[in-house]
Length: 164
Image 1: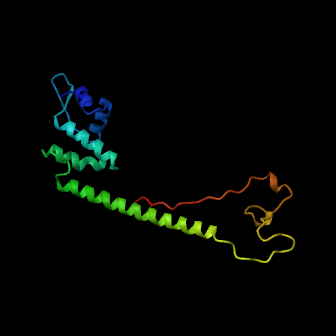
Image 2: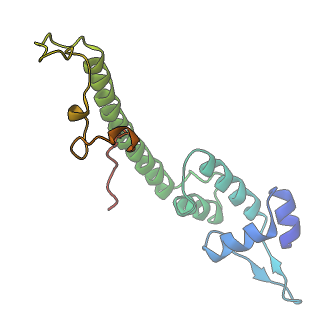
């Protein structure tokens, strides 16, 4: 089938098909007029790409499934390499879940500490213990024009997974 027909059947564009071909995910041949032609398995491959992308697989991660279909299997996950790709994705998700659990716990701990009543302290001079003064704010030393300066803001930095 030609590129336009495949694009229509797979509900995508010829441009997308050419891109997938350039990435080695699809293969085509040229007919006598030089037009791209695709085997019927390409429809299955494109559906497989769509399903896998929807559940979080990157384009390159779909390759074992596409190769499995190209080898003649009716399902893209019928080959050992596809099963390895599933296992790898699960391990990645487990790692991300663990990291998110750690970050969530840290935020819960900080919230709990922030909501605890402050320990009683002795007021200094005429300043109540709960009142902030310009000396307690981060930044440059107090100045008469302190109110005109930008108010410092709090930043929460969430650690992220380092790239390998």
